[in-house]
Image 1: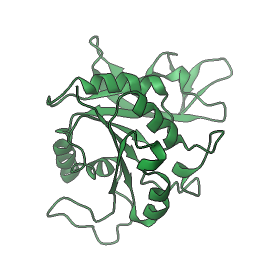
Image 2 (image 1 turned 30 degrees about the horizontal axis):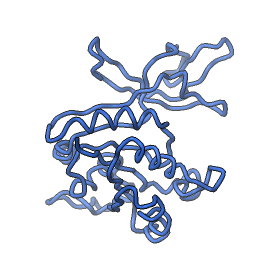
Image 3 (image 1 turned 90 degrees about the vertical axis):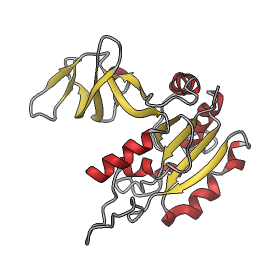
Image 4 (image 1 turned 45 degrees about the vertical axis):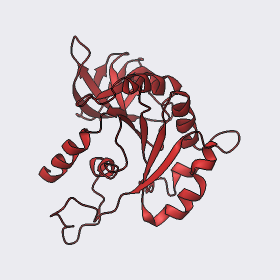
Length: 234
């Protein structure tokens, strides 16, 4: 069985939050959320972690999140997302300053990952079971291609007591294949106890066990070719 890789998307600067939230301590010994993610990934059998960051905070980030921090129990590699890191033949449009987004960030790891891999956000907590489930699936794939997956969560277990949340509401078929993801914003439990979202103007209800995405996906490395073609076409 092959050891899968964990791709951590950490290039966001947390503009609304006001700092590098990926590095903030939240645990009893100042552990960051990333520490919990890597710990759970190691226990689930992942062999390498690849961080996508930006050069602007590279020194601060790599001083903290390095192989030594994780006890040498997992290989660590850094790749960079910058505005002008584009496929051959493409250039940055004049006046563009906004980052290219998640697909571009993922694409930055195409030369660093040659095995099945999972993708997570640096600032989200997924839970040990999620890494176990996706790790077991990815480790069985070996040299296979075009095998992709997503760990879903029941919406009732992803709500916040401190306001509304945005989630990707999933549709699945009878064989549990994912058929669509639609982002819904302002999801909460209303005064009557029903889970609703508001982004279409009026309250629309969601079943308690509606599957939602928290952006934990698994891919075989052939996905990078699809990712690049999608970027070129978009």
